[in-house]
Structure formats: C-alpha cells, structure tokens
Image 1 (cartoon, rainbow, N blue to C red):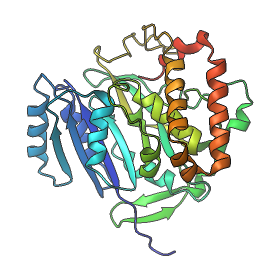
Image 2: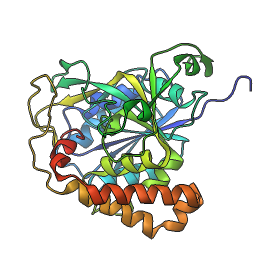
Image 3: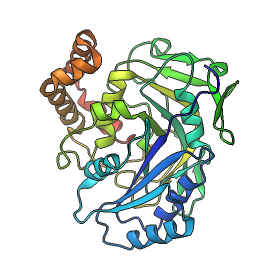
Image 4: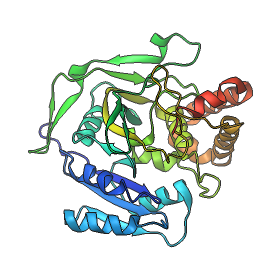
Length: 331
C-alpha cells in the first residue's frame, strides 16, 4: 500500500473546577505535531471560572478543531467523558485530564505505535513525568509503568516490539515512514492488575471504547479509568511506549494522588480504598454477563468464554492485601 491515508484522532478533555490548569492542557493539545485531530472540551458544571478560562483559551487559539460543551448538571467522570464521546467519531480516541499536559509529539508517537506492523493492539500507553502545580519537574518517570505484578514470568507477559517495525509519522506531509524508534513492549497478559499510568497516557481504538465503556454514569462517577483500561486489556491487549510523553501534575488537589513524592516507589495515595477492586470486578463481570451477545459478536464465543473465566478467577482470588497498593497507582 503506497501513501496510505492516516486515520483521524478524537481528543476528549474533561474539566471540573480546574481553572488554573485547563488552559495549559488545551494548549498542549493545540501544539501537537500531528495536526489532523478534533478536540472537544467538556465542562462538567464547574462552579469556578473554568468555563471562562476555556472560552479565553479557545478565543486565543481560534482553531475550528476545538469545541466546548458545558454541562448544566454535574455528572461525574464517566458522564462527562460519555458526552465527549458522543461529540466525536474518529478511529482513535484519547482522554486528557484537565490538569495534565501532553508533549508536542504525543499524538504522533501513539498513532505510530498503533500502526506498527507486528500486532494491532487495542490501546497504547506511555510513561509520564511528574510535575508540580507550577509546572516544575518532580520526577522524570513513574516507577511502576510497565512493571509486571503477577506471579507469572515477565518474559511471558511482555513481548518486545522491534523498534524498526514502528513508523515515524511525517506530520508535514501526512505520511508514514517506518524507521527505528524508541523501544516498545507489547503487553498481552490477560491478568487483572495495573501496569500503566493514567488515561491521559493512552490512545484507544474507538471501536474498543464503544465495546467496553460503562453504561451507568452514576455508578462510575469515579474509577472509570480502572474499569475501561482493565476491560480493554482483557479484550485486546496494549502496547507500552517506554518513554514519558506527557506530564502528570501533582498540585495538591488531585482526587487521590495526595501524598508527597518521596522518591523510591512513589506511593501517591494515602486513601483507604477498601474493597474498590473487588467491587469493580463485580461490575465488569455483570456487564459481560448482561451483554453476553454483544461481547460474543465482537470477540467470538471462545475468546468471550476465556475472558469471562479469567475475570471470574480474578474476582474469586481478589487479594485484599494489595487493593490499597493497586489503587495508589491509578490516579
């Protein structure tokens, strides 16, 4: 195939009371080297000046690729994201939190990873740098990224992707050039644990999001990230880009990342998350059983049954001793 046309990308930015950072987040999208994208910013009924800041930023950019949707009622993380998805239609979709920042080549590098010639994965994820509320670097990476936390052999869970098989994106001409790049790791292990950073680090196939996105906004006001990422991994696997391509901001008002960065293993959350892990697994299983025909249509009967059995096994074992540790990695 010569000079193939690149697929488009949708970007959904959700915001709730984040006036200090939302402008910078939107500008980090506008600076992307890959230009063919659409971006919708969904304000989840903020009570501060977030809406005015978004409007000022969009007026400054004067860019038709950006749209702003303001919700009259606060619907939480899942509801705001669902509204953003309803506004978009591209083949790939990314979710950016309103206090995070993308590197200029974030979309380019993720799309290149999706277009590798080895394996058509469901989503890509990269590492992150940690910054404070003023944008100063705290740490150059997130330590747990790509770490295998099950008892299986790591070599069985992570398969190297030859960098020469992942293309460069020629953003000026809208073409693809397969040349050597940074190491990548294909992660196909279907085990329920967390080896990624936040959803701001990811690019999903829209078809996969449509399959696994939760159907209840109120039930999933929080923890949407854990639900969709684990479900997506169980369905299709992911490819890890061993490089920080965005900045995760620790500003003191994060929902769960409220611990100071001490170095070492970087436990970011002081909260007691109780049985959150088990509850989320229950919800995943309920969705799979309720929507059995839809999952079988997408996956085939054999893969559906294998996924269901793995999820049931994870729920049966659900080791309570590492629930707090798991949730400390997610936000």
